[in-house]
Image (tube, rainbow, N blue to C red; front, top):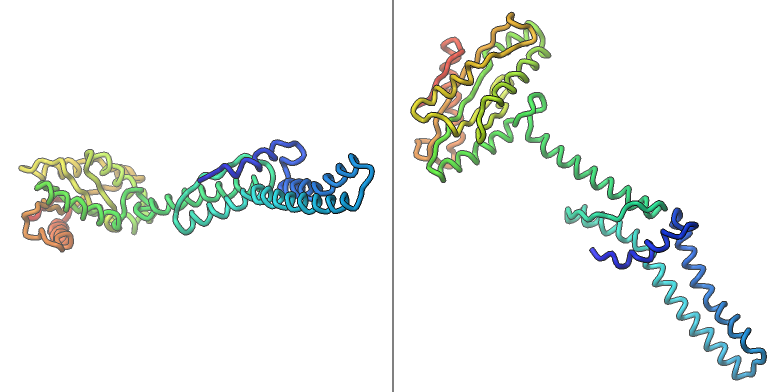
Length: 301
């Protein structure tokens, strides 16, 4: 954005009796502009003691010319001194209609300067709030990890990446076996603490490139790229062996049930609806573990 028209305002802002008042700046310019014809006439009369008809005619012409000139100068200066207002309006329009951010000049003390400072502050706050909302919409508010909405999109991208690279990923659905009992006997606040700690433990036990999401109330989805393709169960057992501490100490014993599938681009469910098919396979594998008493691992074929 061109700031050359901002120079007049910046210069007037340095004058002591003008720098805190935008109205004084405008009135000062108008006063100077309107006084030019009068000052010109007084100066002309002062240097000419005797005036003839021709002199009167000449005086009128001088008045007309000086008035026209002063009017043009006044309008130009008013346009320049009003530039901060136009700048604010343009900045707001670009931000609202085009989502384009422009840094406004800040640090001036009069009302126009404060307006620019406040508008810039407001835009920065809105941008920060919007960013927070975008991040919050992808995170589970309790555990701070990805929520199901974000996890589904992440899983879809990883499955496409695995197909392109002819690689494979291990997708696991982890269920907390005793969470409902904890909620019933000790209260949901204790259950929330358990969920938070389990999410933290799972986060620490996934390697770089792997990730997890809170899938349901007591379920987490884990995607592993770096696992032993010969013995995928080993990677899941390592996660399952982690010690889970609860607010009730050893009075609560928590186990994790895991249903998992290896996803490859050449599997039977590598189609346009492969993610839905994969999730069905995961639910079936997890259901087998739950039906057998929980605390185990089932990997779909």
